[in-house]
Amino acid sequence: MEENNRLNLTAIKATPKIGNEHLTFNEKSVGYSLLEFWQWSVSDILSNATRGRFAEFIVGTAVEMNPKRLRDEWDAFDIKTDNGIKIEIKSASYIQSWNQKNFSAISFSIRKVRYWDPNAGMSGDEAKRHADLYVFCLLKIRDQKMIDPLKLEQWEFYVLPTYKLDNYTRSQTSITLNSLQKLTESVNYDELKSIIEKCYAEECEYQKKVY
Image (spheres, rainbow, N blue to C red):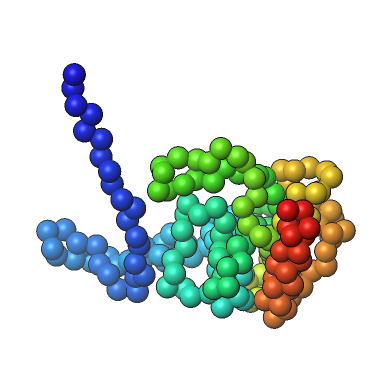
């Protein structure tokens, strides 16, 4: 019987880069840096994919995350604060980077997911919401000439403890802005940290009652 030579490759931990690292061929620079790759690939922070990651970064700055603790693509939630709050972050915008005939309708995904365990190399059995709370980030500006995602006053944030989404009686896959506004009020960037802490305490109290 042929022996099963199964590999046991451990996870590769990324380290922070500073941008001046160069692409090389046979130990010689080919004339392009990592900074130029970043500029080429993620300068359009209005585009859907990049805006989503940028929204995660914005919330991270509000809760004073350590930016050297790098984003993990495979985590079951987007951010974990120093005091253990697990946060899922969603973003939306009326204005997109492509041609539009109308403003985009605002809706956020709240779909339950199966957690990918990188150590086991497989997904968990149960689809659920793994974060303690959700932050819905809306780039609210409707003037194409004024819109700038770097200006945090152009964003508004809706924070909900996860149990409120679990008990939401309508769709369990998405939530519209109108429905969200019936569950909570928007806050500005400078209020975000305190509201996150308040919602986390509310989630903890609810879980104590349930379990």
